[in-house]
Amino acid sequence: MTVPRVVLALTGAAFIGFGIAFTFWPGSMAALVEIGLPTPTARVDFAATYGGFELGVGAFLLLAVFHPVWTEAGLSAGMLALGGFAAVRLGSLFAGAAPVRPAIYVALGLELVGTGLNLWALRRLRRGIKPPA
Image 1 (spheres, one colour):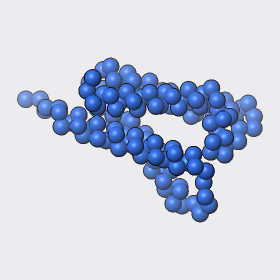
Image 2 (cartoon, rainbow, N blue to C red; image 1 turned 90 degrees about the horizontal axis):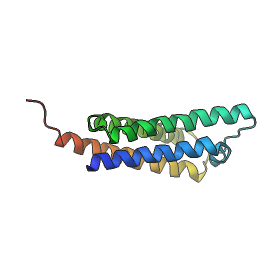
Image 3 (cartoon, rainbow, N blue to C red; image 1 turned 135 degrees about the vertical axis):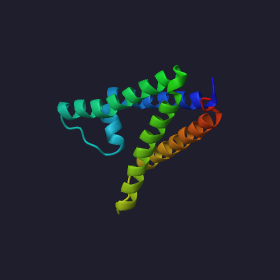
Image 4 (cartoon, one colour; image 1 turned 120 degrees about the vertical axis):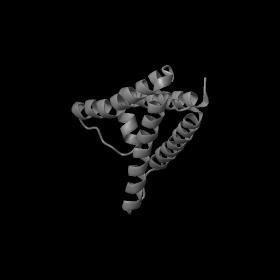
């Protein structure tokens, strides 16, 4: 398996892992960032929004591992999704004056590393792709 596809597989597995956690343990995951889920409606919506999105993206990324023509799109999707999370999280940290829980910094670190890995793998892939004659 090529390095870009390994990065894609790791990114997909991470999305699936977080998706499972948000789906099956929404209360615990929400508590990490001080989000209250006071009603069944709130728990269902939180699990669907966070768990469902992460599971869907993770499934796409893992499918892209097994379809080499999708590798570039998968790496781009992983980079942009993680980069979007990181950009808004970082911007929100700079905009806010109050301290936040350590979970925010852990998430930001994972997002930045994931963004960087996907960008590196995407550039590596593009250097290896020869344009059609």
